[in-house]
Image (cartoon, rainbow, N blue to C red):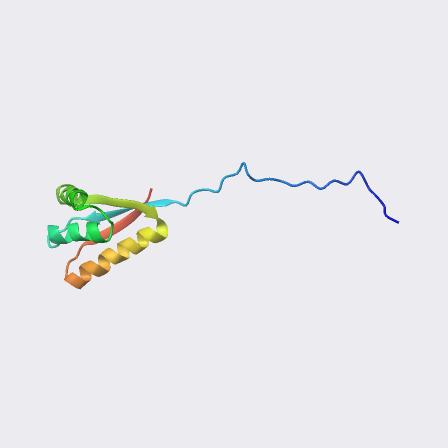
Length: 104
């Protein structure tokens, strides 16, 4: 014998109206100093940040003139990796080049 209970209904809830939030983004900067060569800064911008030579040169001049320059905007993990890579490459070449990140 089976008992049918018509008053019991299963309800499913849908969360399609709630989008997942995008991860927070971080700006990565290079800072000017009196020791790091302009050529090395351009090399970093090309190799670490994937900039064209022309764009890297413009960013480098901005860093030289204003003391700081934006290199890119990334997720936290990518930004941290880029900052660490800059510091490691600069240290290997004997430069005190500083890179920082801040939440967008």
